[in-house]
Amino acid sequence: MSFAVPDGEITWAVFGDMGAPMQGHAAAVSLPALKDALSADEAYNGVLNIGDLSYELTGPNGQNYMDELEPITSKVPMMTTVGNHEYQYGLSPSLAVQNYYRRFQGITLGAGAASGSASNEFYSFSSGLLHFVFINTEVYGDEAFVALQDDGTWKVDEAARKAAGTAQAKWLEYDLSRVKRSETPYVVMCGHRPPFKTPKALSEPGNRFAKEIVPLMSKYRVDLYLAGHEHTYLMFEASTFNDFNIPPIIISGSPGNNEYIREEAELNIQGFKWKTLIPKYGYGFLTATKTALEWQWGSAASDATNDPSSATWKKEDELKNGPAPPEVELVAIAVLPAQREALRRKRPDP
Image 1: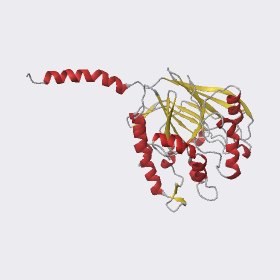
Image 2: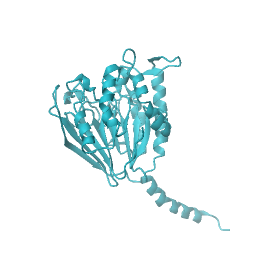
Image 3: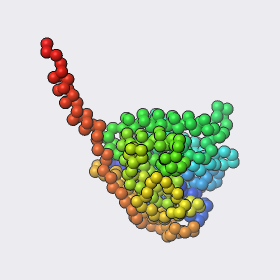
Image 4: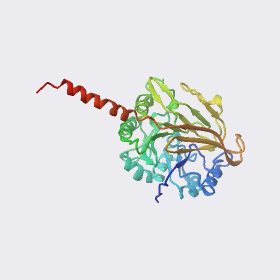
């Protein structure tokens, strides 16, 4: 299946941590609104599904999840990556990581191959004015890391976690260094875990996300970081860590699952202070225009209880950022003529 890139503005629906509808209660309570937004209004052109799929992506539960998303995924692309639940339930009997690899092999063969990662856990693609980078934050997590072995079995393998993190960081710099801002002025990074849960604060000794990813986000001027993991809505403004720039962070992790809404007292966020916290079920829309990267988040359930009803999407927060200034290009234009003149003056007379 292939999808055409529409002319003009492109909008992506954004969420992570959606449970399979068959579980009832809060699981996928936002999905009816998400379906209606596409079928009735054509409100978005694609889906960014940022990990922790289905709870869990296995057996009838996983099949129900994929079947219920099909009215959407048959019309627009859905791009995703793994979360902690894919690894937490990676071994028998759940085999969630194996099921992820199998069900989303198309990403490996498509965006993974095209971006040079050959992976469906970390990869990139461009769409309109946007360059998206997906990363596997479980290489910085605290769940057991499950990996395919040479003998065809899947086992917990911490050496594989370290190797995967090294490969991902190397690939990420390669990818970001090749972005043409004149064509895709916005760079958006998507990872299941927010930076402050990798697995703990960035300031923790040995934090690989702080060492390997934060400097690259700063160096290549990533415009926005999208995450799930926390079952709520959070927005953080741009900040710094150890003199590195960190872009605005948006957590859209509450489309509905049966771990329910995560209350403020449960968040335990260190090193960052949110601008907006909305403990409700819902999802967001990301739109790129020539002048700004626009974000809207809305609730899509009757309330934030453990047994809500689906409701029409209602906007509750928004953010608008212009593209990163072309610092590198401006420096080159301004400095190189002066350098050439200085060299000419130093050249000895013939």
